Length: 288
Image 1 (cartoon, rainbow, N blue to C red):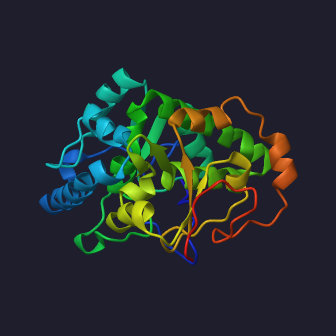
Image 2 (image 1 turned 135 degrees about the vertical axis):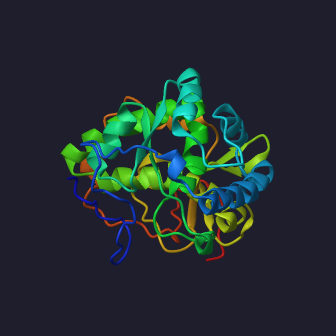
């Protein structure tokens, strides 16, 4: 039996997933027929309200990705059907997992072009906040961009980099990259500032806040700066890093030997997200 992983949150959090019968890589079967009418209704509620925000607040690639993987508001997606479409688009697939899984297995999945998606979905009273990622966060937030070839290549490169970071004991540094891009990244394109991070797009409040609020700092993405920056897990972000294209994100990490960078900044204290540096390319200065 696989061990339940520790949750990356402050304080104790007992993970809700069922880990008793997972495979060695922490995958499980998505028993779609077991979802209740109430669970499908939670999906419909969340999907409908977040989908309505995409045109104004999300990168265009997000809506395009939702269409590419066949997602809609009517019911929880069948992973097998989605995988047929993802395979045609980028060669990726999604795998069912009980919830959060250990870093080693997570990196291995990404390196093999498979993204772990939790099989459980939140309760009706949890529509606005959840302490750990559920099916809606994982699917609506992450899966659409796996249909984008450039972003999909970045995710695979991140998985490979994660495996190497473990050898350098530098996973916390690389985790900051994931947090400030895959989870809470912003993109500045022809339509203006837009969100692409899953943590933003699966949250009604932060979708609007990330783009419109005067409170947070918004700074142009720079890899070392991101690796040096602490993040908050218990509130909306105080700092967002902004890319101009997914190509920029991919090129920042693909084929790069992070070893010297880890050695240089590994023991340095993290920079608080409220702090701006003289070298930052500031897009908007926050009021915090």
